[in-house]
Image 1 (cartoon, rainbow, N blue to C red):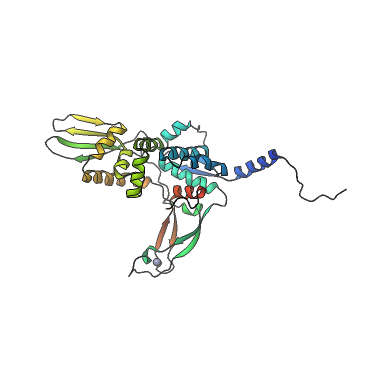
Image 2 (tube, helix red, strand yellow):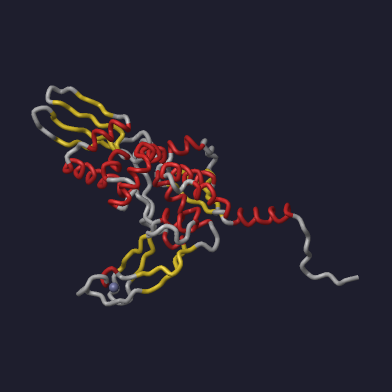
Length: 309
Ligand SMILES: [Zn+2]
């Protein structure tokens, strides 16, 4: 009889898949979604996940939906919370929370990190600057990007999808007294809706001219729940459908748009998740942060070299 090796070879895909499941189950991560204030567990990316994302790349609203679906299939609520249907997930989840879950999914995925990142002290970038430190290369793990400033927990008594924050702009013309903008944190569904309203040509135009998918007009539409215009005779006119909001905001004077955007930022910017590695410059000894765009890194992990930052 032939002497057997220590490793026994058998042909059984069932056992192989079981063992892979065990590997997949090992790499899970718990994270709090700061806007919904709910803890979830996320699981790692698999090779097969990229198929739907890849086929949806030509249409931004489909891509947005597929990206949300990828997040949806990779998270599990805990603390006895029930997982909603996908449509409700989109309606009642903010893009901020989706962003945090994408970080967590990347962080759940073994061996994933940011490699050969070029880091430079911001004090050394301009000519005549106060620091002469050179650029250096670092490898960054996703864990390192989470710090005490990363997540800001929602602190209003209402849920984010019921909440709106009024910003009032006095006008005082013959006809208009003032305009009230009721602003909000948009849900994933809000974003999908506006992308499908705009259509691919407009989005391509935005991207070519300003390098962003949404222009400042559309960004304001996205965060506006309702507009009330109060006339001098005290009549109030309400605008709340997506299309009408878009028609109205596109005709606003630019100064009003800036005013509303600034006031919105003051209220809501703190809720944008920030994933950044903290450094202290070896030369000038000042602290600085290196910000990482998490969604961009997800695209890159699937489509290396296909999308330029
Ligand atoms: Zn420096």
